[in-house]
Image (cartoon, rainbow, N blue to C red; front, top):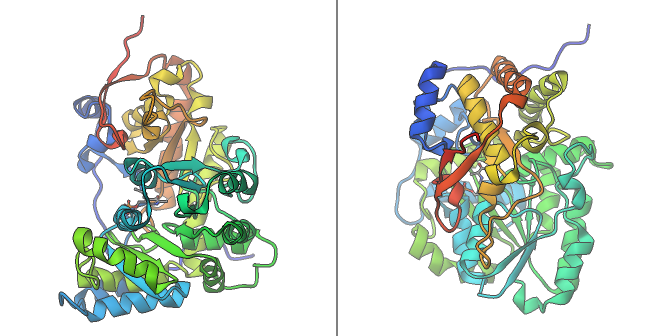
Length: 461
Ligand code: F0G
């Protein structure tokens, strides 16, 4: 008998979870104004809000924490981190930051001006926020196929090279500080970008004299998909693939809270020393001195190690295999989601489930609240609330997809937890016809409103 694939690690420490009753959850979610970000974590049984900063560190990362060098300047921990990043990406110049959006803030402070254009494949919300806050434009050039949730194609996160070239052609290079390529494409469903597409984007960047920024939060997961799905890469190691990816990049922003497998941290890396120098002033102003930039020495040590661990093929198979396992349960129950399953999460297709609800009542948010009420599971809306209002018209933007993202933390939950999640979702799915009203907004911020938004239930008439 062939031996099944099993985890390449075992558990050394456990954290108890809190179960609750439906009555308790009804009270808590109402008090939270139907925004799951407002819930205390002890009110949640299985937390799938995000895979960001929620991973379990290894014994070797914890050991590295004890060796942190907390010197203000020139800490050995910084050099350890820099070496690890150089080893993986080949990019020589590094600025640490406290997390990914801080890296965006530092870089965009240096390169983005009012009226600029930054084309990309579904910019993440903080990236879009930092661009639009500077009165520049984030232009989405994701392939059209990404919005057909039923279509199974291997690289659904790709950039549409035709759309990208149209943007590059119609604006002077001086107005385009960078093309932003996000790997994996989080907003489109944790979908990977192929090496062929990365190469194609880079060729267009060269042709039009524009720099390529790789938003790298899930670079190792993207490399796993290239190895397992793209012709010519099966025999290459994850490290070789990652090296090739970054051979095309000019800048890299990294939220280390994902594939760095740390609870906090981020960085910027550059090919050209001059680009790094342009950012130094902002790094010092916003983050801290150049050799710590908002991170403790111990955290830089843990990250240096975590980056290497995230490239282990067996670890990636376990992690991405767990997301695929959850997807297989949803298949069994006939629940629609963005296909194929992504690297870090399942994106349930709320529009296809809550067909009775108008988009103005926020289908994905409604589904998120129902799943919480059903089983104490916290997911996150990737739909109209996240999409914010149009910065000019102030009208709500209704994206083509209304998704409920169920993100899987790294090395944290077991497949029994996945079974529980799938069963709770099935119960909601079975009673979908009875969910006849959604929510309306009672308070919101002008940018990145979904974190703090307040809602009330629309009354049935
Ligand atoms: N880029 C991508 C692709 C991301 O997914 C995130 C964060 C960031 C940048 C910003 O990084 O949180 O460290 O400041 N994504 C998290 C999520 C929050 O839940 O998907 P950060």
